[in-house]
Length: 224
Image (tube, rainbow, N blue to C red; front, top):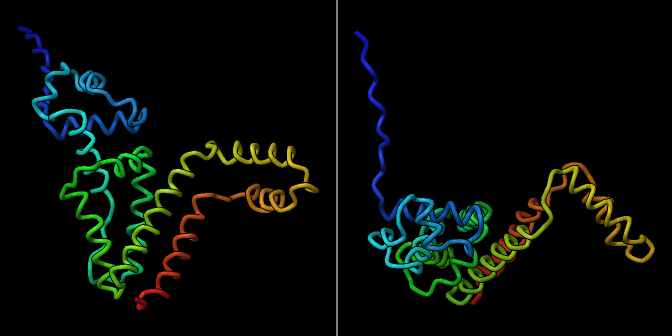
């Protein structure tokens, strides 16, 4: 006697604030933060838009939540560790986060409502600097110099042409062709001798600049 197998019922994961924010991050990563609307978010979750309001207050609440999550992905420097090594790891971690979420820099800086997650991050950085001997004024200078460099590099990197090494080399070759060496000798030199070389990666420049800043801050650590 044969028996028919019962159809497998799809298990629906209950909607929660965590699921809403996770889906919002996926949408932002795929199409940019500007594309994030309550309607699109509801569609991605397979629910009606009004259902979202049981878990989030409004879109601003979602944006605050996203800012908390991405800031939480950055390694904060433990107070008491070697300050330069700890701040360096923090900078590299922040850059990796910004590479995963190109929209995050603008969002983090735009949020006006403080939260424990977003307050812990600058407090840890400033604490690491203060414990290392930086004055309050120098710690502020260091904090803003580092963040300006990290965010600025990330934005610049995101706007550079993308493609395979071969495609990028082809673009560079077109630029060289359009720029006579006699008129632009130094730009031509950089492109020919470095950009067109196999293995050149603009992202490698980040650590050079970061170490330059950290070495400069070390010289100012015990100044007023």
